[in-house]
Image 1 (cartoon, rainbow over the protein chains, first blue to last red):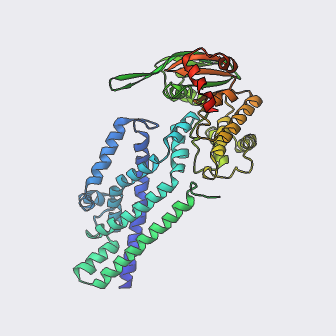
Image 2: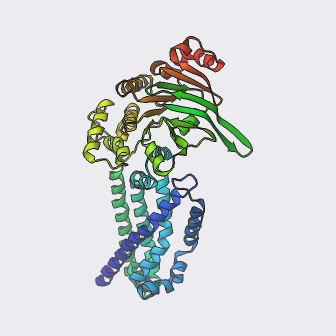
Image 3: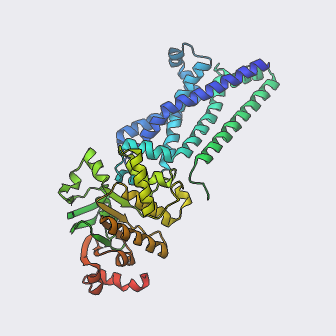
Length: 217
Length: 248
């Protein structure tokens, strides 16, 4: 039984870390575009921003479990099958990219607009404003976005388990629910609670210690 | 030499049209220390945004020597922006970077060598009186110290024009005096052209050689500070001067 749980935990960790990584690779640039394409942004392109914004909203409106099932054909195309760890990662990444895009967007929008204007007057190019002002100034918020994404993905990964996605959620449903093994159900829940707490605390610590606005003499 | 040439800028709000700057002209010689004063709504901020090249006028233009600033595009525009030093009322420092990195920021936008940057930034830190603070973060500084960082940052690219937007409006009297003294000292040492935009008469009186009074989008008075204080001609100037005792 412990082998089963350890395997489940490792699968969940793999799913959560890999899908966080890839959803940031995909969602991060989109979040940046959502900010800079705005009418008052540094590289305005209103139509582009509207289209991207709507696309993000549409995907975010679809309940994840439905999205996951709808994505089966695409998942099968990419990883060869519709179930298991890799299939979960594909579905989670597609579901989480718009979520990450919005988180990155709101993190960057916290940067003082006057500072952006100041950087423009200093002769910064749009690329320099993104890399040297937006990204550096919003580091604490971006770290919190990573943590929020990971925690959300722990939950979504468990949902993916319901349709054969592997990981702790899969175990909880197959053993805990279908076979009435309450002990397994409880252990998986406790493991996930600990996992979420760990993610929360590690990233909170990182965000606070890297934030230069809170340093006192 | 800076030549403001029949500059006009208006804003449209639904059916309303607000003329923020109405056909203003002035010539500012190299090395002048000019104060532009006016009450809120006089058009100062719009003028500043035009001078700092973030707003385009509807008509007229600004010349820097023989360059029409609003004909500049792309790389030329960016290069010109790097020749202007701007100090803002709200400091606008990078909160996640040290004093040193804030001052070095404009230089790091170019391809300057790191040793050269270090040398220049260190001497600017000395100049603005922040020795020993180079690895502090803005959150550890007082308002006056933050403004010193902003002034040093504005000077890094060795600008031909130092433009100050209400540089002391957020500061107390003592700090205001210290910052104005610093600006005067910089002016004396480098002979950079300084334009201060402010609503505080005391700032103009204690720091500037020449002043322009703005009212309802126009330059209503332009001359030496001593002369205007001695014999103001426009009602707005008289009004501003009548508050003088209260201000000082």
